[in-house]
Image (cartoon, rainbow, N blue to C red; front, side, top):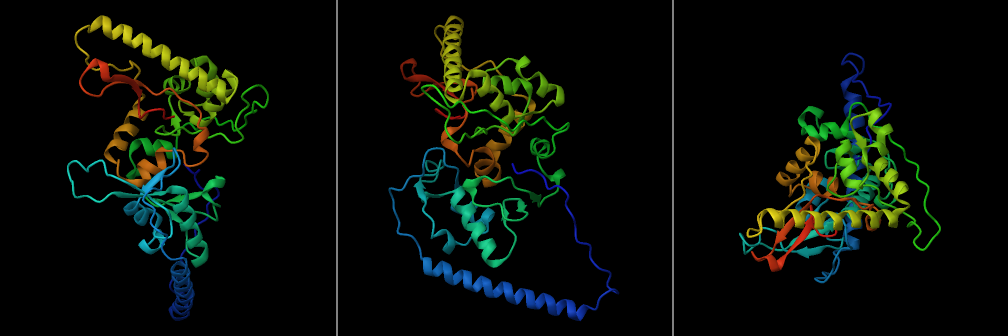
Length: 349
């Protein structure tokens, strides 16, 4: 999530006796007239672009952070006419079985929505507000991933506990942004790496960090000494460095997964030879991650807490591998159609 605003200054309202009301309202009227004129020009620009030709075969790239049309209007403050200028993917809702007459969802790319909302903000001269955050200054296109400063538009006390910790972890975790890329060998590191995995909070416990990145606690003693909260991107860089690079780390995580699958299968088959039961990893997330996961399940259809917050929105094809907890999936109620899956989904980091 974007960092908190530093060095914030607030405008103080002048006393009513200090300035006459009439000139103030005149200035306000002039300002509104300018904005209204630019809004009209923006609508004309959108009309010129016109709606895109509908392509029923369009699919977003793998790991694209998508947003429904309803949430795009609500959280990006875009109109239906503005959305019509963007490509979208049609997909059946997960509730289609209960409501057979539901129309397919229209899913838009977060980056495309962000860039259009940013363009609109710059054109009209109004603040850029995405979800519950207002951006200070121009954050640049979504793909650039510039460091940004935002103002939270809700009270911190109104947020769920896990998100309050995310916004203001105490003590602050140690963050180490440097990483020396592996540039030699058969598989050099990709040019750009996404250090933030999907479905994981920005700060985690020591136990969560060790599980995710397949490392021992002593590897992050310095991080744990600074705070009980471990910065996910920092520990990701530490793990990739320890394991010899992006691809070597991927192989290490894959081997850890395969080893755990074999160990769990042997254990469960010995304990429950005639009953499939519920096979899953013994690992349990910290309270922080559990609260986040429960909140995500309840807010599954909410853009800010699910789509935008949970998933990597940039460089997502080169996400650093993590080992999510495993569980056995029984497709048809028989052992012949079951397989191991790791939460939250197949082949997802």
